Length: 568
Ligand code: ATP
Ligand code: MG
Image (tube, rainbow, N blue to C red; front, side, top):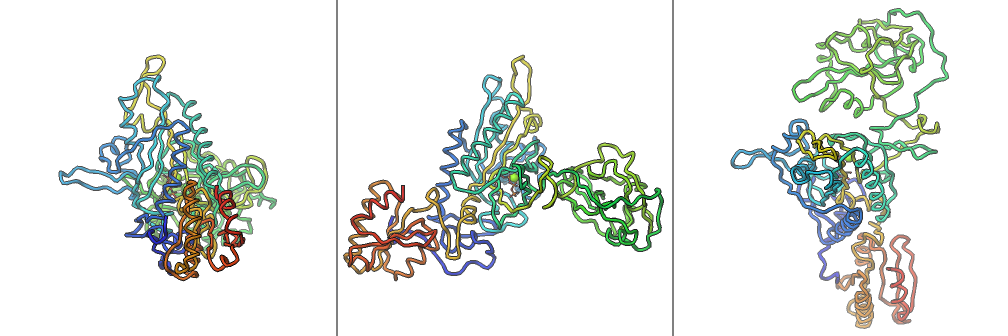
């Protein structure tokens, strides 16, 4: 390709809302253009990179035995009603109507459609297992589209769905996909971890996320300093917290604590370590048909993990309750505790408080707390994992310290079980001639997000630094001065012969200043440049390594062989 023929509109300034390097460079280097909130066009350079990533994903999925298909983006709401997700999937689901008043959605994920494809077409266990996948457009009306391609509204996902006769077979494919994803992200040259995850709106049981470790990640990941334990903070667990502080032993009694409302105040007043206190976090839970106040009780020195809390009560959303809503529910803010709550109040208690004693907690009476409180007589179903694991907590696998790091989610694999097939009545006949709902797995990779992730993982203050697997071109042959006949001829010669060898190279033949062309090279970030310039007088040219910016001077007749080795 000749640069004079390439549409790569590079610019000096990044858009004001671009805070992350990938967002800035994707726009500045002309990889993409934005045309609406969370909406991006891929320009030629972006499209080449996107296709390279897509090809790696496709190659590994095909090797893994999955069949590629293509489902439509527009999905009749009917299918979403059948699975029960039409009403419970949040506002990310874009719903609309056609001229005949039929309801539709723009597919944010395709479990419903794929179940509809397989239903009545796969009828016997003999036809199983089956894995169908696609690499297509998704639409999610994200609350905060931002960070460029990292969180768009329209984006490209590789989504695969597998069908099985039983749980064991589903688990086997889950492990197989973990291996396949590991191969994909390794080929892309990324530093990543597979971590335990929450299953979110997709549902099902066990799930794992693939996280690229990056400072600018939106996700917090808990990792063990010693063993291989790693989990998204939304799903992370720890060994039960302990303390060296002696327990404040006291008879169970109500204690006058005037105006002592926060954990800090109460604990200071009672001279108790917050470890021995119970904190009440009062939230408003939003369900399909109702809203209600829910209280979460956790240790005084713990923090409520919102996703865990949401899973505990099964609500669609949890929001802060206003002072008025708290009062109307019959609760006394600052003095709320697990006993003598108004009867209709739903509440949950963190697992680590089970059977604990010597605690202080609200008495549900203004200006009173209990001391010497014991956790007794609560139903098992009240106890849930509610707390946020922190750096410094202890790993439940090996007893070492846990740390925290940032990651960007690039893939997510789920064991769905029979959730969708049961809801949509998709069945097959098993070995005994009995009708059974399919066991399913589903597996997603954010293909367009990966374009940005590659830059987050590899850039400097000048621009992108592509690796050979994903670079739009491997080499940028820069003619220093196109008016110089000799430079043109030598560059053209090298360009033609590298091209003939199947190498993906670019010839910067534009009538621009040398400095301008170098800036484009640095910004776009091709792995290497070859400078054909003044050195020709001594018969030499220069090869620049984009990563190190180091230059090597070579004789013209030796450069081709050198480059061939370098680039392949
Ligand atoms: P997130 O937590 O980042 O919102 P998710 O858990 O909702 O993502 P999944 O449903 O697991 O996403 O989708 C599979 C993959 O699709 C994700 O791992 C991610 O790489 C990609 N993805 C999800 N949402 C977006 C988005 N808004 N823009 C770009 N890629 C996305
Ligand atoms: Mg996910």
